[in-house]
Amino acid sequence: TGSVTYDPGFVNTASCRSDITYIDGDAGILRYRGYPIDQLAENASFLEVSYLLIYGELPSATELESFSDKVRRHTMLHEEMKGFFAGFPSDAHPMPVLSSAVSALSTFYQDSLNPFDRDQVEISTVRLLAKVPTIASYAYKKSIGQPSLYPDNSLGYVENFLRMTFGVPAMPYEVDPVVAKVLDMLFVLHADHEQNCSTSTVRLVGSSQANLFASVSAGVNALFGPLHGGANQAVLEMLQEIHDSDDDVDSFVNKVKNKEAGVRLMGFGHRVYKNYDPRAAIVKKAAQDVMAKMQTPDPLLEIAMKLEEIALADDFFVSRKLYPNVDFYTGLIYKAMGFPTKMFTVLFALGRLPGWIAQWREMINDPDTKIGRPRQVYTGAGERSFLPMDKR
Ligand code: CMC
Image 1 (cartoon, helix red, strand yellow):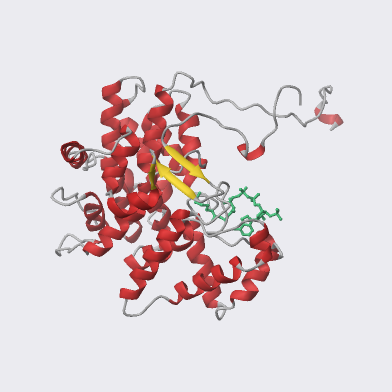
Image 2 (tube, rainbow, N blue to C red):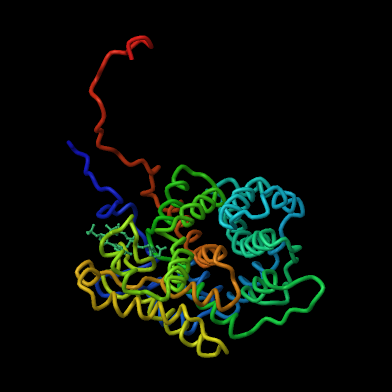
């Protein structure tokens, strides 16, 4: 292959240098800007972690207040964006609606197109953080035929999103503080994960000097796939399928082991973690806590725990170092909160947003950045002469 290294899936290729997130996959360690994920999940709010990822340091109380205030001021969408939502079919999946709407922000904020203008990047950062939850709730409301709600900026970031999602115009909506706290924590756990598929996409698109909205919109599309963010929806569908087949966990595990029709244990395995995903451990605990408070616990939690137990003791999974990843238990919590399955990946996108923004900003400011342009190993035909139509 000459001077070109063949590395499908970039398993061994570092595409950039980064100060943002550290992962030790063998030890199961994840840190944002040096801070261990469990400490952040327990002590920091999502906006605090967003600030940390984007600006590099934990904010002081005044810095956090001013950052939150800026975000609060930009939560409304341009009224004309409503027409945009109206154009989608009523049963549209909210992920492509989200990516289209994020892409459309470039048309509404044409002052945000220069990636090298610091002020423009700053305002685009704030607009994205502020507007994506509003877009997400509009996409959801569209899918169930309810009117969308304007943001209520007296509420916190996550509370506002919950109200726009579950509230209706004619009735007051009380945000459950436990739900808000758990969702905020789940967003913290998703906030960055170094060069995963969607983040690499954001960087690759941005490396052509496309603006932040265009790059993040591409990231949302990358996240949609079932091997990436779409896994949280796929896990719940898998658990439901097992439940509907009389809870036959063993025969499902056998199907996975026999690689029947490409059946995988969704929510298991990771390119980098060859140990328990530290985020999965925190999510599992949260799922158990949330379920313990419910009057009728979800039978799908039992199935998930049984699947995990069987897999962790089975040589197929042990020898391949397949452990639960962040997506294994999140869907159960989202379901308990009242989100339909097709919103799960949207929730992942809300959480991952500050990571995409931080990585894009780091990329654009790195003097080493070049346009992303991988090479290939050509395997097609050698030179041959054109065949006229009557000779083919
Ligand atoms: N169930 C069954 N077998 C699996 C699984 C799984 N979930 N994951 C990997 N394997 C097997 C795979 O068949 C292969 O076996 P063999 O060597 O016999 O061919 C071996 O393990 C290595 O797998 P791979 O596909 O080469 O590993 P990868 O690093 O390319 O893929 C992954 C990583 C996350 C795409 C994969 O583990 C997977 O498909 N998992 C299920 C989907 C999922 O949960 N995705 C969420 C990932 S975490 C959050 C996120 O990124 O969104």
